[in-house]
Length: 371
Length: 109
Image 1 (cartoon, rainbow over the protein chains, first blue to last red):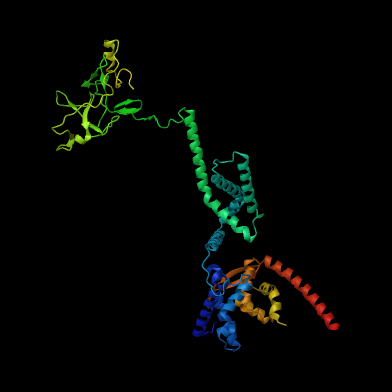
Image 2: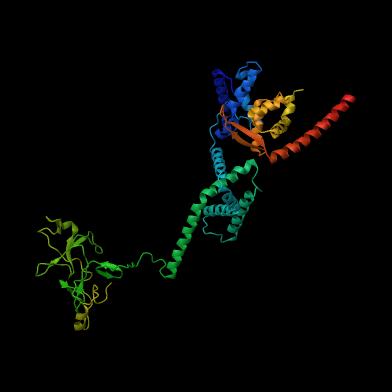
């Protein structure tokens, strides 16, 4: 159809490119919109011109590409290029994201299932207006140091009502429509979009905290967070006193005198052990400056006994490792009894009875009162 | 008098009238306007006008593939465009009548 030769075709391509440069500040999408068929239209116009036998070139026919671009832009109802010296403006992130949003929406609208979804979402818009008002209130309240889902005093209530009214009025298109203030509303909307989820999360956290404190208060141990009672479903091996595992037992006789080398068994003859690490772990005593490790006693059958109390040991630093990797006390030092809680316990007035109670099934550091 | 100035106000009407006759692509509309005697209109003005009328919802648009040349974007009129055309046609006729009467009296006087 076209009788243009290569030179003309190149001219047309160059001319079209120049026109597009003249429109560059509009953004690629709008430029494409305006110049979809530009080459074809130019070529056809030039072709017609040939038939009338003028033989004019592209420039003669269409004038300077800048003017052509300006005419195209003006006829399409778009603003003239802003800075004549600087035609390519740096892309504006706000414009870009708007354009991207419009592009996404157009794509979605091409899908059959989108229409009812969009109608549904549009119906939900007032919900967003309310939520947006609430978010604005929360942000103000946060700056004022107030927390909670809803206001608790008149001033806060007025702020909330004000925020909701502003948000809904803007949503309805009643307020903030003039160009000068529209950006304020747009910014506020963007902030609300970003802030809504974190806000919901933090308010929920505050409520959870409050619930937890209230529960603690109900349970009667408000302020008692430092003494925790650990409740374990699994039975703990060893000896537990007041919820805390015990590392050593100290036994006193009926007169209140300390006993050493006392073997403790339960009602079925099983040794009562406080430690299960075979001397590897370290234990701290009240007011100790370094941790201790324990050693076992050996019975007549040469078996290690860990139920002989008080367990003896030495500061961990004194231990060395033997050939088998076991922690042992070197030849020079010997195991000692750790510090006693007190030198003498109160004496019992009925010695024989107390002697039976001392080896009870639930061992405790002392049959009498302990600190 | 420069007819380009006159044309500016009624280019929408002229383009709508041309497209309402038959769907057309950019240069096709230019050609038909020229054929109808509107010589002074610039190509770019027509393309921009088509684009604007399409954006405002008065025209529909579709792409027609072509074996010989490039694919062309065709514009057709829709109900909104027709309503716009009718309203503007009426306005124009009234205005033209008024001007006609005015100019006639001027001539007679």
